[in-house]
Image 1: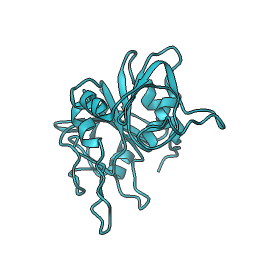
Image 2: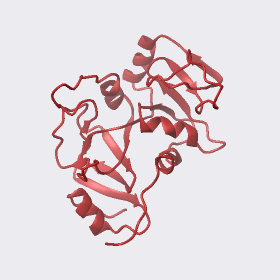
Image 3: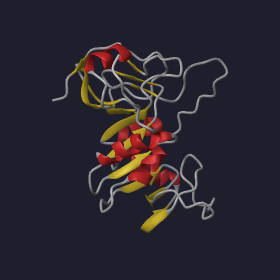
Length: 216
């Protein structure tokens, strides 16, 4: 087995931010995706939307400068850039469902090789179903990207041939950004975009348990 180092959560957020184009309208889901706001490249205009009714979010506030009346959908304090606005969440959902977002970045429990997304419930007994706005985002955004660890704490791949958890959306995920690699979901399966230095494609395929086409 070759030697390689996983991306940290900030490294992963930076990798996602790198691919967001100038002028994009983007929703960042609860959890890891919120870190992307802190790593937008300098000089690149990215308009961040939150489903609770914010447009023009900035990075997280400095310690001691939090305003808990200004929070994202995950109840984390955020900042508002000049020109930003907040509004009723019904208008926010109309924006999400109406195809006005270029990209949404979501976490996931599982993603299938063809882009099915399961990110709201593991179906475990006692779990509280809370799909929130994920299904609206997954289908409404022009591109849905997933940001997650490649493996569970038990070492199983979260990228699977077919999701076993309840689905959020079918065939909606275009890219999967993980701590070990970036993958494209296509109608014919997975394609490699990049992976961490030192990791080989055969090793990655062994971890995932699925065939992965080389990078184009």
